Image (tube, rainbow, N blue to C red):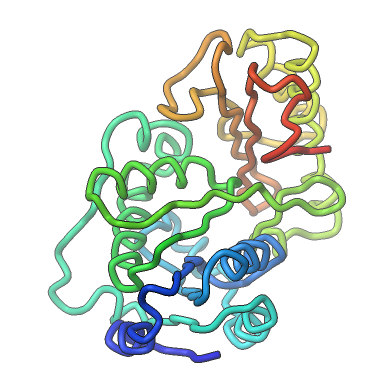
Length: 293
């Protein structure tokens, strides 16, 4: 496995592999099983696998959150090698945003103004879209892999790739979860034992809504109320619990097509997000992606 630090090195390393299938997994490091599952999927479907490790400062709204984000490159590289990675691109901020950098990629409309966009502001997804576009153009992959936990990010990236005609397939893989159902996240490492116990209420509350949906309830207010109740009983503060169209992210009153039930919750000082898809076309509720079973 090779580690490169500059775009020039990256392109030179990848040139011999063009045409053989390049899979790309963009990350901010602090790899966990969710990231490794993406790398393994990329390895199974491509001849060459590229991992990027870059803590992108432009998508953090809080300086403290950026400072607290774990940086574990040495351990990440070892895990990536075991998962079948061939090239690790680990640039500096100066490499990604060189002197004079003055371009922002911005996706407009409901895709970025709701959910995370409503709480963290437009600048968050401007940061995401800009860094992902920059990485995709640097790597030039055939496929790029993202986790379904960041569902809104996937929708935004797909819109950007379509609009800018970037020749890459965006592959969304199911949310990776621990045994207690909690979605795997680099932020989980910052939870104390008691906070981790409380955080497990998040997937249980989502499951309650899934069960109600499976029983035939389609009203979004009734479904989100079940989630609110679970979180409130545990004393957890939520920033949002919303049900939106899975593709457009427009708000829904009743579910007649695939919908995204998404939330953001504060557990102590740690901000966690999660979601499940509620699809009236699936008889055995959420038997596939994002299942909490």
